[in-house]
Length: 464
Image (tube, rainbow, N blue to C red; front, side, top):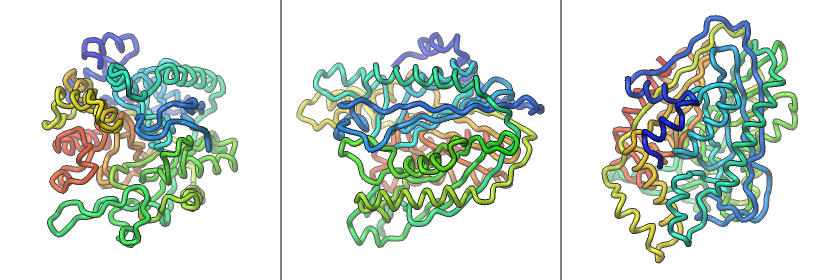
């Protein structure tokens, strides 16, 4: 992990230093424009599928043996509202720490903007890469562990991203209208956490379950709405963002790369509307998955795909474009407190212990990276794009659903669409009251419970 000094040196020529300055001042940065006459939009996409033999999900499941379908990075560039704004969704498990910063920096370079005006969110499929460059360096030192992310492939993806944006900007069109819609999705999302009489997490459904007792449990707290934000050039719909909160896995671990049921639904809609770029963002899903309705079978993937696709189509049914009157971009920079129980020396002993299974050696390398990042005070960036009364909110890591629901409460009167799985450095981000309840999510949360207040302060300033 680079130091704060190295980080500033790396990004000084790329415009990221103001991001850190804003954090030090404890304030959000904002760039509003009252004139929208010169707005333009460009769509881009590029393939990010890993090569045969590459690690999947951090190296602790079967590596790539074949492809059910390809992985993509898809996004838009908006110009004419101050410096260009880039929004991108990536079919990867996660982008963490320096890897996430480098993605934003590369896309910013190509778009002619600064990294704090770029949001990169992962969709979080699991038969996909889980990229952390610093964790990769830690496991390479061990000599016997599978890659976290192969750097040659990682940097090839960044080169593709630069080329895709450069080409897209040549085909920009006027950006004149926006529309929103939503529809309820049936039989996909369910809460993973159920409390016993003692107030701790008991049954755990996960992303799939064949246990009839667990499947019979209620859905629990979810957000049933799939939200769509559509972008228009005159009467032509040129891009559509779709947001839904659930872990997007039907089954995985077989080495077959796939965008899974949310990606397959997106691709089906894309085939129907080739002139409109359809992009899917995963909402706050740290405690949400399809376990109630997913038995891990091939048929379940088909069924879940059909249900997400139906939600996308229904959310677009009554879109009513309105002229753009106001565009605003805000960032808020937060510096979370790492778990006090994490001891780098002890974690490194476990990583070096060749008797431990791979998952208990590769995964802790992410913990060490997070500790070093926090020590060097490299912040997490939250951001929001506001267009008229619509706000697109970009949050980090595996945030619990409650953050999304709270954001909607804070933004009463606005249409709030939330994408999580931005910078994955913190791993899971539970709400404060979840910590004493325990459970898997809390065990892999890299921040103290104070992260709840830190996140909400940032979200409040973005939506204020």
